[in-house]
Image 1 (cartoon, rainbow, N blue to C red):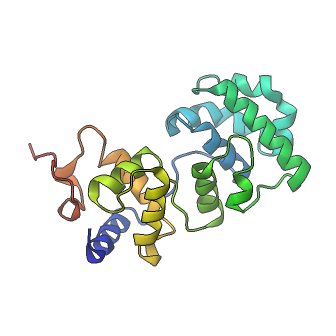
Image 2: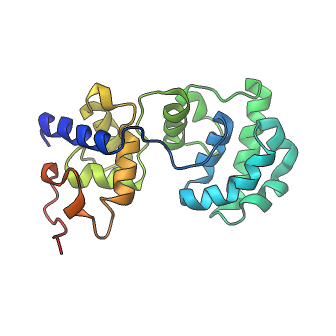
Amino acid sequence: MTDAQILAFYQRLSAAMPAPETELAYVNVYTLLVAVVLSAQATDVGVNKATRRLFEIVQTPAEMVALGEAGLKEHIKTIGLFNTKAKNVIALSQILVRDFGGEVPQSREVLETLPGVGRKTANVVVNEAFGEETCAVDTHVFRVANRTGLAPGKTVRAVEDAVMARTPAPFRRHAHHWLILHGRYVCTARKPHCPVCPVADLCDFAEKTPAT
C-alpha cells in the first residue's frame, strides 16, 4: 500500500468504527490485565463467560490472592490452559500487592516482567487502560497486515513495528483495535467478506472473495 492508500484505509475503518474498543469485559485496569492474560489462545467470548462471576467477587490483586489458585481455577476451568493461567494470575497478583501497592504499572516493560504477561498482553493493557500508542499483534492483526499489504512482516514483532511506523499519527491510538475487529468480522481467515469490505479496493490481496 502507498501512504495515500494507508491513510484512506484508516479513514474508512475509523468511519465504520468511530470508537473501537476491546471486546473483553472488565471493570478496572487490574481486571483488564487478568482478562487479557486469560485470553491467550482463547476467545474473548469464552473469557467473558468465565470472568462474569469472577469479576463480581474479585476486582483487586489482594482479592485474587485471597481467592487462591484453587478458587480461581473453579472460575476459569472452561478456558484453555487454565491451570497455567491460574498459577500466573495468582503470582502476578502477589507481585502487584507486594511491589506496586496493588496498582497495575503503566510501563509496558515493567508489565512484561509479570508472570504470564508477554509483549502482546502488555501492549493491550497500556493501550486500552492508559491510552498509549501500541499495537498488540494477534492472529487477526498479523493476517490483515500481511494480506492487505498494510504492514507486511514475517514475525509478530516485524508486523507490530511496521504497523506503528506506517500508521498516520491520528490513527495510532486505535490502530490495533480496527485491525483486530476488521480481521475478526470482515477479513476472516478462510473466506474473507471482500464484497462488503470498506477497504477492498485499497487491499493488495490477489484472491479476493467474489460477490455471489
